[in-house]
Length: 179
Image 1: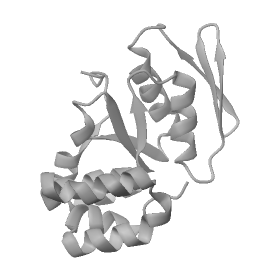
Image 2: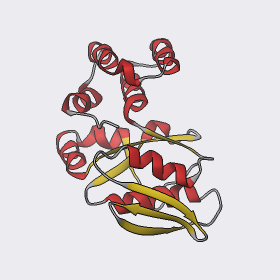
Image 3: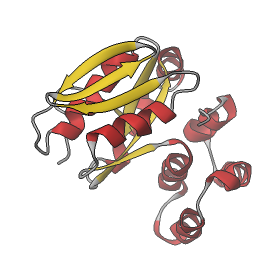
Image 4: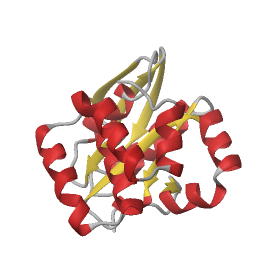
């Protein structure tokens, strides 16, 4: 899975209608037909400022349903990290996640709270190199979209676009869960 490049990130934070069209053209092969249909119908319902993060998420987000299996979340997030090796297996306590050869046990409660236990644990494993953040616009949904970037990329974005980063993304913290 490819990560967004500088032009993609500039589009997310500075984009306009023309940039949206270029972004869609650039990433058409990565979009599913249903997503393309959704994008076409969005113009009537959403402002351009609302459309940009939604379309960006279609291309680069890891989307987690509240009913997602925890093992699948690890696979989904792991696929978003280029050149990283992620393996996962279910064990009696929860999950055994091996990240770049180092095993980590993720203890689960075997309840609905496990989705974010898994997400928080995975986020901690990949730090300091990477970080996943929640697209704020997906928070009140039953599916949450996450963007994984290199930690230094998040830092650069926060320096350049502090208000916009805070508006578009939520840091995965202890309180974050499905509403």
